[in-house]
Image 1 (cartoon, helix red, strand yellow):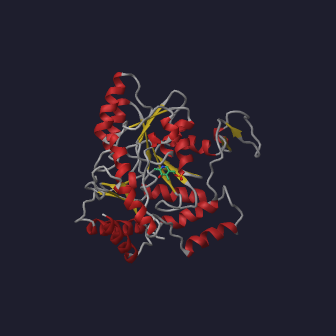
Image 2: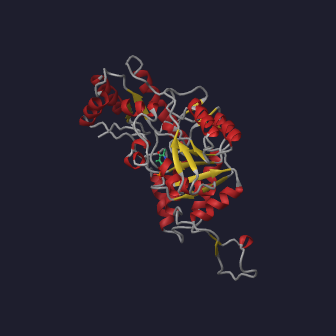
Image 3: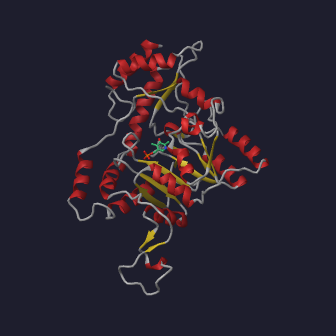
Length: 385
Ligand SMILES: *Cc1c(COP(=O)(O)O)cnc(C)c1O
């Protein structure tokens, strides 16, 4: 079986994890802060808060940005459900903005139009959550301009995009957003087993997210509000937080992998270009990478041609699976999931995301994919079109 994605674990990664297991601290030791500094430096952001998943990172980011009951969060439909669920955890209403049919990222035109209407109806979003789909950066400057004009916060879901950049600016720098999150789930660009991180340039937001990560507790005497003369055992719970901490075991894997992100993203780009070239003569939409963008190529998604309304994608998908090729679909639009359908969304609401979901096919792409395996994928897809 050739899977659609696969983690890469080296002997160095294993040694780094074993070192932690032999050390004094399995959690809340020295490795998590080291990992946080290293990710912040690589992404050119000032602060980083590592947590046990990107889903947790999204949750504490939403809370730190002030989202609550009656609030509104907008995201895109072609994403993993966590991008919308984080708003629901806070009791907020979710709405979606359709995607651009070329880049498959949030459509700036659709966003502009929806904001204009929402402004008139007095229901502007509190948070916009754009997703760097498949690893291609979103158009953050345009989004930030609109955020300034309409007064909403921007939370980038860069689960697919560590190692990506736009005009030389790394995704994660938060130059045009309030917070950016990465995921370290094994299928993503790099992994800590499970894990995620929230990046920001705002020290206050970083503090609030750190508190929320660990029960709302602080041990920092400078921040105490109660006891004036605290003894050394004293700590304070200042708000209602969670146990979303990353362990040192996970951080060691992440820290060891971080140094390979750039090389692995290079490799992903080489393989993606090879797919592009091999598919040039087929009736396929290959990924459109905007000029000045370096995609992290978490996913390589092609869009199959419209075939007289027949179920071409389903035929190709099943035939390739039967040949041991782990093709996949990213994503069933979130608004069509039963949970969101029950909240009132329905088919036809976001036509570009729905069209993408009907015709998109995710092909295997990961650093260890050999050219021979890639040829198997290419020949298989060719033979079924
Ligand atoms: C994977 C993913 C998440 C969730 O990541 P976890 O680390 O598994 O919680 C959120 N958003 C997107 C777009 C993802 O692909």
